[in-house]
Image (tube, rainbow, N blue to C red; front, top):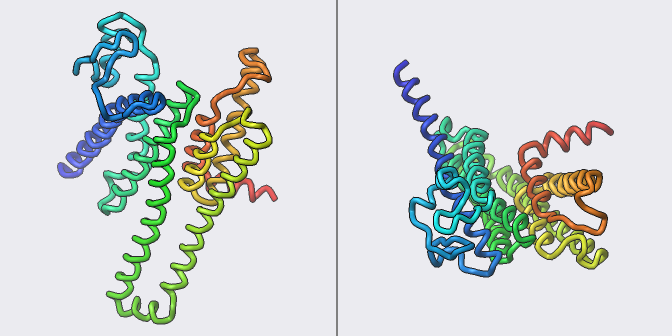
Length: 301
């Protein structure tokens, strides 16, 4: 009884700790979004006020609390601070917390659960940087996009290699597993998994070509090269067929938002909106519910 109670409290503190970690990471991600969008190094130099250029003190950089205690204003020049600062911190904090709850990381012993968590938290952090950059500057910087694509592709291939290595050694250590190796079961499974990886890469490239075609047709008025690279990133991360679902959802969310703005007369038909946030939202929804959406759609026919 006592052990169970201690374990439950340990889980609570663990999840809370990840939320707090997310707050600090979110503060850093906002800096990364600002600096990479301006072509400045994200890790060199201390944080400064955007208006008065004063170097900020440690007490000015406490995630969320500094913004609240300073009432959303700079301590030195009294300029109103952007609401993107607390947004980035809270979004990352809840993402780290929600992802941990979704995966049940503190209820699982295997190391691969935490490995997967770190991978997904990294992907989420990259998406948050891109989200902030597109919302604030209408830009998806290459200094973030290229590493994101390379990282996702590398981890996809690494995951395949890890499964192949561990499954082979596991079968080799077991008499029945040795029989499965002899009859080609392991080989057939690896061919199947390699096909899945290949399908993911090919579908991601197909999505990228589709975006390239749209850019040519619209002459870059509807979307740009950043959206094309983001589509490739999402295509690799979500995998087939969830990447198709993610892109479709991105277009649907973007269209609905544009329609609302048109009805409210906030935008005209000639105006454009950043498309990246809707692609990212589509990717997140597809990651969580892609299989359900696909099965529901196919069940209609």
